[in-house]
Image 1 (spheres, rainbow, N blue to C red):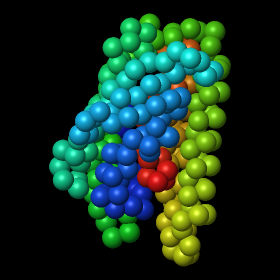
Image 2 (cartoon, rainbow, N blue to C red):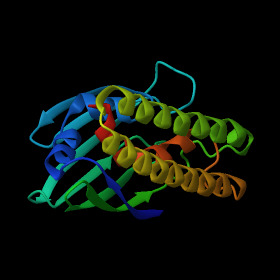
Image 3 (cartoon, helix red, strand yellow):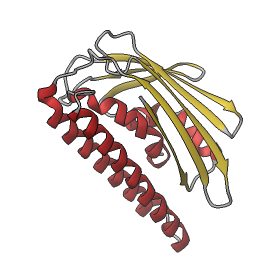
Amino acid sequence: MDVSGEFKISASPKRIIQAFQDPEVLQQAIPNCQTMRQIGPGRFEAQITPVLDQETSFFLYHFRIAETIKDREISLTWSSEEPSALLPDGSAVFALTPHKSHTQISHQIQMTVNPNGGNNQSENGRGIAFITALTDRFADKLRHHAGVNMTDKKAHENFGETLHSLEDAAMELENEAEIAAGKGVLGGAQMWGWIALALVVLILIFLT
């Protein structure tokens, strides 16, 4: 499964890259992520619960982040050896183009979907409901950031444009998830996985 697109954000490439390399930011950005610890340069280990309800079980994921072109491109890869993980592996490349007031981000995300990863048709509705709640949470965090950290009129105007584009992207991805669920492609509560990882770049900057 591939997800691609581009958007602009009021932050420098350097700040964007710093956010990607902060384990606390990563843990907040990924839903149901219980722990995120750095195990080496650009390498992280995460414990993620696989379903909507908070359970004691979790899947172990490894993330690797690299600045492939200094201040211009960053790559993110993840993998899990868990046999029932919805997303056993995937990768994302984010190209950063700086402008005076913002950075243009082009992203290409590729994900491998495990057909045994919680593919339960009866849980489709719960999965879709969770995605809706997830995108609402993203929007709330973005608005909170705008109120706390942006004071001048121009900054608010720029943020408003960015927020609008991010909400559009979230809605588009949510619709794609709903269509996929209807076709039985990604059924089950684990459907949050691919949508969350596709959206992670949209919120990293606003959680710092």
